[in-house]
Image 1: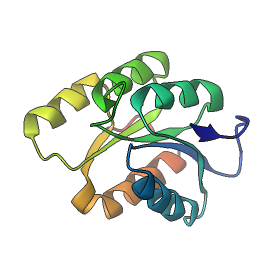
Image 2: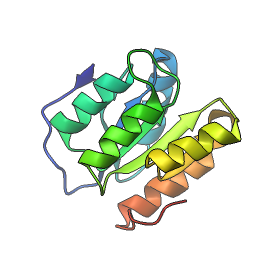
Image 3: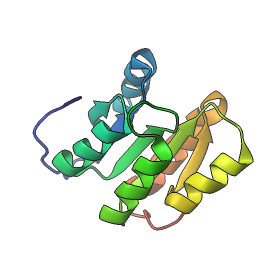
Length: 138
């Protein structure tokens, strides 16, 4: 688990990234950090670490993979939604199973994006959250 002392920034949107593929997390962090008003506050390699980081860092958004060790993304999303109703939860997956997508939306995800096509959808969703429209689900 990585991440610094959690202090809310008025400069922009703080994001936690959770995926068990370290190279993907690193690339995603570079992408997010390269956008005006967005900062990766921390990263996790499993769902349990993601929940712990959200508690410690109090970010505005989480980008989380669905298939991870220790605690899967669907379960982690359900817990984070229960404890943080206004948190923007974006599920990112390589799995195009519609039943899985329905399950993660029911668990509380604001959006489900396929890794193969996520880039524009992710940036659009984070821009919406940055503008204070976190309640609108996609």
